[in-house]
Length: 144
Image (cartoon, rainbow, N blue to C red):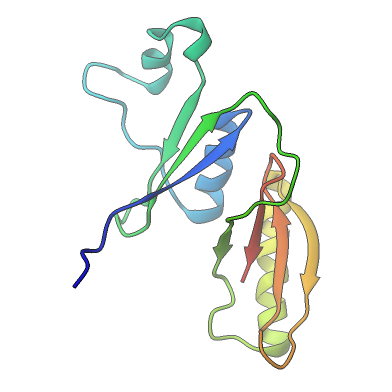
């Protein structure tokens, strides 16, 4: 039997801390404490060479259940659709109008944080409705 592995999800982005803090708000994640000997992540960041300052940030599930999210600065901007995306499960077990209401409510919460609504995928005979969104740097995710 295969061993289950721990994993993290990595985002390429222009502003790692900004994107990380957005996802903290979306998922209820937190910024982990800085390494021993540093009062803050900003203090640690100032010890890095200038070209590495602000180049990475992370957030974690405070319950320890979900994967760590890691955000790394890359020079190029996003140009095409993500090949992998997060599904934020806000409508699990709900169907029809009740599900749509849950999706719309979460969308309304996320828009002021910088998210953008892309399109609603309406339920069909195989799938329930979901709402395609984008984070603060245009990475797609679904409210599912």
